[in-house]
Every structure is written in structure tokens, then in C-alpha cells.
Length: 223
Image (cartoon, rainbow, N blue to C red; front, top):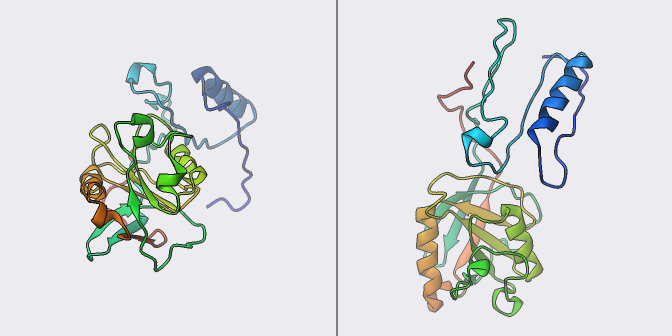
């Protein structure tokens, strides 16, 4: 569309924080630099509309086009296959080497009333329990990729990231540090029941996925 265009980037995040003033300053700088198109791919952890600096994008000038991209026409399917043949669907962006390919691995959910281990905080997992196993982690509280790091540091070989009551059925796909599949709450509840049964959870789990695919879905960005 613009083969001779040049790309400039403006840093607004530091140490996992992003002030609204930094975003506005970047806009001002870009305008001063003569930038024609701004692509603002930002998000933060704010839960209240009134405290989110970028929740609304509105332009009053008739010559300015504002597009809110609402959908993605690709899917990143992942499948968890259990020893009894049962399959649960999820999503994954992991692109590393699959050492677990064609292997059934043990599955563990280190609950025990220890909330940090449920959420897979760093240093909360016992390597003697999760080592060489696929670890089920609850979504929430800490960063999703941080959970994978906690599993990796405890010698786990894979992670299933399960939605909870708060996150429901909406999935978020990430590029993790080890083989990971994100699943919806209902699928997560099924996996937790499997973990409660020691006989079922030993040598029961295999992770499999393929690259992004899918037909264009009947939604689009809005103007």
C-alpha cells in the first residue's frame, strides 16, 4: 500500500508502566515530525474506563480517519489430547521446538490451598512436584508469560493456562517461553477434575498445535 513509506517508533512504556502523558507526548512529537499515519497498539491493566487514557479514540476533524480494529481474521488453534482420547481446544502462539511431540506427559495442578502456586507465581512451584510435567496454571494476578517462566524455572515442560470465573470464556493468545495452551474456563474446570484424579493425570496429556489459520470472520474494524 505504501512501498516507499518510512516507519518511526516512539517509546511510551518504561518498566511495565505507561503514563497517559507519555502517550500524548508521543502523539505531539509524531505530529511535529510530520507523521501521516499513527498505529497505536497499546493496552494496559486499567479496569476502569475513567482511568484509562486510551480507552476512547475520537477525532473531530473530518479529514482524520479513526479505525478501531475489533477483530482478527486468524486463529491459532491448539489441542490438548488426553490418554483416553478426549480432546480440548485452546490457543497458542508458542513457536519453539516441541520436545514433547508424540509423548504423553503427566499433568499437575499444584493447588493445596496455596494461591501463589495456583496462579504460578515465580518461586511458588515445587520442582519435585512439577518437574518434567505439564503444569495447569490459573489465569490472573500476575502476567501470563510470567506464569510460564515460573513453570520453566521449576523444570516443568509445558503449561496449560486456564481461565477462571473472572476471565470466563474469552481467550488471549501469547508467545510463551515454553509449550503453552490457553483454554477457556469450562475446559479448565474439566482439566482440574482430571488433575484431582491421580490415576488420570499420570501420563495423560499431550499438547499439539499448528500455525495461525482460519477464514475471514464476518466482522471488521469500525470507523
